[in-house]
Length: 551
Image: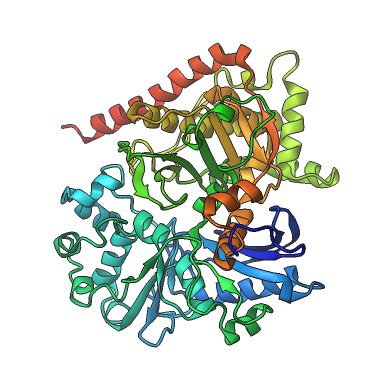
């Protein structure tokens, strides 16, 4: 019966498809990871801002990692399976075969990735309509959402792709279809990336206005006309064919999916914080901001009533936590930006060699090098005259301006390891200042946030975490399980199995606090001054652009 204690040895499998790899975990009913596996996946960049993947390659990787995590256990103890993935666009024909999303006509490359910016012209025209659906994406649609990408396909690949297409899936929904044969979509994907409304459904006038009336004519069968909440059980569970592929028993419960960042939010935001002396202990869950930080960063805040935040996506009803409205801020590149700054520096080969000699990652080495050169000052003070604006891939939130560029001020002629370490630090700080800017926009609109809950790859970097605490002035909670996104995916499987009465109950039981990082409040004045410079950078960039556009 739902809500009752499970028998010892009930397991759930979570599968997470990120930008560069597929990961899977075997998780027990307490939210503890018992096994983990990962497998890289292919990416293609046939031209600048075009990023593509293969759904067949991704499914094959899902099969590899799932078989690895269930080795050596009685698979009959596995009760449920949950998927999360990046919000990439998968295109299949009417027989569910891959279609090319590229000029080369290569059908293997049938996914337009989330970070693809090919549809700049299309999103500009969509935003010019000022249609009412844009109110739920912060007033301005992002080029990373699905409507502009669909319009690009219609306008650029009419014969080879658009006219032959039978199904357009968000990647998380493709995975749940592949596992169950059920083409129902998750409310999370459709609400957050496709303009669907949990209350009203699709808006015919929007699709007609932007030139995609095709979807209205066929009752949205190609993009989804059956919609389920995340965690709902799909069809009759895992099909025999998918069960064989994945190494799992046929018929186990498979959940309606989540976007990867939302799975991370689900995996952290409901943790029991009693005994840590945090302000959020006596406050509702709406005082918590989940920050899921990997290749990009997503800032998930929830509210009881809808809050409209300019430049921040949402409010989306029940898109992450059932019964709550979700606002989603974001930074288009964070982990990717840090890699870009570090790997492009003249001292990177030296850094690589020294880190390898110490059997450390380059970032662990950089963190220890910063400690070495900071002398008596706090490490953050090393960037007193070096400042970075981090929008090398445009600004997602809260400025919603994809034309913005990255900026660095304070460079010198020297290019040694010290310079690299300090540039790395300034970049990490810039990302944290971006989070502060998002929080300020959310609070100005009506959110009240007291605590950050971090997860994702960058949350494993202690410098990244401490800078977020110091720069926002808020405590940062890290999960006991660092792979919170996979815990979130497993929570979906647990809900689908019926072992918990609700998503909220599963969250409370399966997500736990591991560590709390407090801000160094004595450094507040320094970071307030740096934040003033941070805001000046973008102000100046806009002034420069205006000068160059002028007569």
